[in-house]
Length: 366
Ligand SMILES: Cc1cc2nc3c(=O)[nH]c(=O)nc-3n(C[C@H](O)[C@H](O)[C@H](O)COP(=O)(O)O)c2cc1C
Image (cartoon, rainbow, N blue to C red):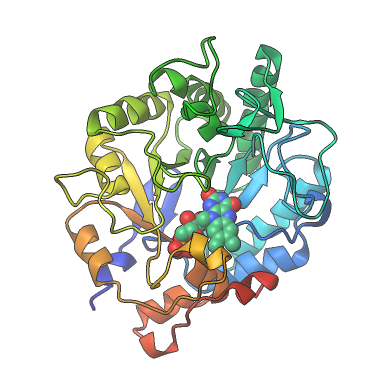
């Protein structure tokens, strides 16, 4: 396997990356009361040392009372949490890395198994997490305006602390995705609508506010998925035309890079072409894209949560698609969760040292 293409530099606005490998955002829940600890900073610092081109943080929540269902998920607001993030980015920079926080509002959630609940009910476009499961409030205009402002503040703070980019979490059935999905957005006001294009309104306003806060030269990423954990086969956009009507308003509002989440990167998005989600997003918007999903592993991540182990696998298909120009960057999750030096091992062709992934890796930060 010739993985040289993964090690070409990449530049876009505030991003100057030494290679094309991105650490995918992965929730670890090791930040008590929302404050990233020294262990968290060391965890990210090690990935920078291990030659990851761009680190995306675990989802870190914005300043809304019910933006999280987990007491140990980091906040991206408040003096203590932001001091924790300052420590994180300093360690990453000391090791020669680049990083962006993934800013997140979970929207309407299941209650966490720990029993912890936020001080206000969960909130979303229509109180729904999925069809038939209402576990929160329908957001008012004032809630929406305050949430948009909170996203903007988080992005401004990320830039002020020295992060190179910000990723907006618009995927996987959380708040922004709850607005996209007709099954969870039943609104009849300007934030609802029959078409996916109409339901991009909330995301567009979030992006515009962030862009207003960070200026034109700061690279802005949004993560999107067609699937939800509650609906693997869901397609928000059922045709390339619908995908174009979904993504172009986001690009026009200020997105530079689409991070296209799939469980398996090789799966075609639409019939009649082998292009995956990132391939279509690049083709339809002309923007840079990131692909992700079971790169270098035999099994996918949702099955991993249920206990399925994965073994290392070839990167040939990834390289073939990248060579063809389908996407610009590739995000790797579980391999980098388990092994800070995965990228270095690929670079130095030390393939016999690559590890698989099993669920036990989640129990500690290595
Ligand atoms: C432990 C764990 C936590 C995750 N947390 C997040 C998250 O906070 N935000 C997000 O967008 N995706 C999250 N994901 C999904 C990953 O970013 C990635 O898309 C997925 O693991 C597929 O990549 P992989 O096959 O290389 O692991 C998580 C995945 C894992 C394994």
